Image 1 (cartoon, helix red, strand yellow):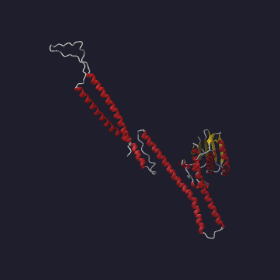
Image 2: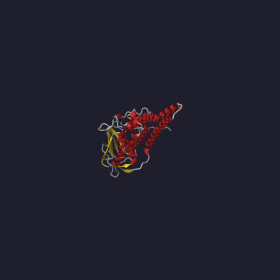
Image 3: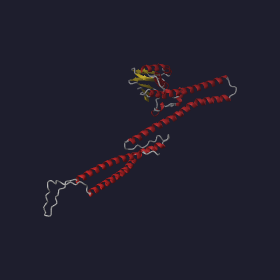
Image 4: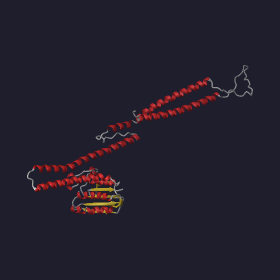
Length: 374
């Protein structure tokens, strides 16, 4: 059977409630009217009609007052007419109230109907088109607003997936194209020398190594949702350890590394958090200017900031840099190495620890990454 609509169900419930109220009111009025009619019929009757002589005859005291013991025919007819009239009015009120309720419920549910039709016709291509929110701030308006927020987030997610697919395809296609080109050229040549074999093997090793590193980073990023060991971590000591590991790279790029702050303790996975700060500091060193610096500061509440004197990131791209494979300067990023998964891994690990990471402009003009760990 076809499901009953919400409008019909609400109308039926309203009619049922209205019918119960009308029936109760009708019964109460009928009982009250019957009681009133009975009291009138049972009223004391005193013989007060004058006789033929013009005087009121006396009634012996032993006779007493005279009561009516049966309802008269006019009284019974009035009762019947009143009952029929009250029942008729009750039915009219129920019918009129049901019709009015159906109309009002239909108008009240009109935004919900529009929302339902919008959801049926919604596709991945028009998720950015929001549904008009009703002016009255009721539950339907809240539902519409929640639907618009959901479609907005889905649109951002789909856009992120498209960018991820395009970037991943490009990253995978580049080494494969190099390998195919080298092999095709090598096959067309005759009388190949030992040096040509060596160069071919070096190219194959380099490109397959790049592919292996890319696949490894993707697998690590996908496996961050698995259970991780929790321990108490001294953040200042961890930052100093990461700074010590990156000291040779900083010296090569003529970058000064500094760490300051008072010791703070957080709970999490030491290996993963070390990777977070290692990735942030490594990027700050690689994309810095010669003679610049990278400063790490630890503040109360488990807040770590990493500031540099590099070129910075445009404001409109600050949310995109945390997406997999996204590069602000693609040509320079490839020269520096890596697959563009460092910052996406940082965000995934920090959120895995219940924290957040954001980027803004440093006072010196470069980037300032802020990591908040709960």
